[in-house]
Image (cartoon, rainbow, N blue to C red; front, side):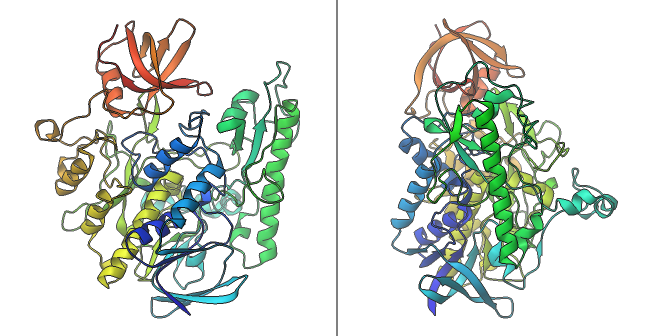
Length: 595
């Protein structure tokens, strides 16, 4: 039996983040993955246009480090589609992750591992058994981390878990259905979790012919382009080099049938589910190709027999731990009318226990009409952005298994809240927390649940390679020299963080506000000049000599400058990056003296 400090099971993006941070924090760590690639959602599942955490104040932790490395390694930048401010090729992401893993002397990665058995005793995981090309092997560890997309390690233990819907009566979540509906309507039995997608990659060739079809005649995709048209439907997930991520929810390649097969102990049932999802996505690509007269065709993005097919499905929902605390929809929504953040998790001693910030609006995928969800978005920087919320440390651990930490979607969260917590940026940063906590527990010789949360928070804020935010503070972007000081001050005085995410009294202290032109220059930005039109509520436009562009920004200072006074009709000079598929210009800075 091999003894390690920390063992991470699963190739999700939370799993690789946990393994990296555990090793960087000094623990001898083994990462066991079933497939040949790392990264889950961000690479092997092909979801390469991440949602959420787009503003520079949220670009922290391993998510921020990953994003900045992508910007360096994609020659044409990341501004290529309209669903996200970041689009990259899965090969680029995987190259970065594998290089990071290889650089850690305390990290062993074992791809091609199949989880066979987990041995537990008195609320403690003792060891796990894997099968690989080397045969059957056993690993023992002080701490185990579940970094799989479906909570596979959790499922091999005796710990209880959640799967599927909870009634409104459970936590009084505004968007949850009543118990009577769960019991009487077939929809909830047929659709136990959010629909997954098996991403397929297309490749654009030339220009879309003007005689393109207005609809796809092939069922079940006949309504897929009705809302946005063919060109917008396809360029939704456009990536560098004309690669296209097909992950289209509106009559597209989401899969809705027989989802309980994902939990089946019958390998044949799981294999049939995978084939059903793959065929569905390939059929969708074929329908788009036919409709566009070959403008989009199968792409080349993954190893294997079919390089257009992702190596694994995009699971939006997992088995979910029953933890020390559960994040519900009530923990995501703004604390009052006009507020720009959710509630802070405060313990009995008045201390804030947040260890990560999420920002996604909340989004559920089912067949048919959109599920009605309580709003948690704000018009910000010329576009809609999700309001931030906190994840407490106790949502990653449970009392039923004292040395298990969750690093993926399977942490303790409700079905409704999962729609906002499942996204790549937050999961990367939750994985970072899991790995850090595991290494700290090993170093201190204690159970993970006995760690002091303030020590975890301080270590995250001051992490040498990827400092991570623990509080939803809007004013300081990741690059600002007083960012860490603002995070620390907010923890010491959580009552000073007001409902709009600003630290009270900060302007009169040594926490200087960011200036308009302090943001670092970005590789693909250019100087722009034109007449500004519009306002904060309706959006901004820049009228140049050639055309009119929508304006957006991810920088808090630029947002405040645009909203502070009426610039409409003024000729101004900016720094920015053009995204023809948005279509918008992303403003990175404002020159000091408007002309």
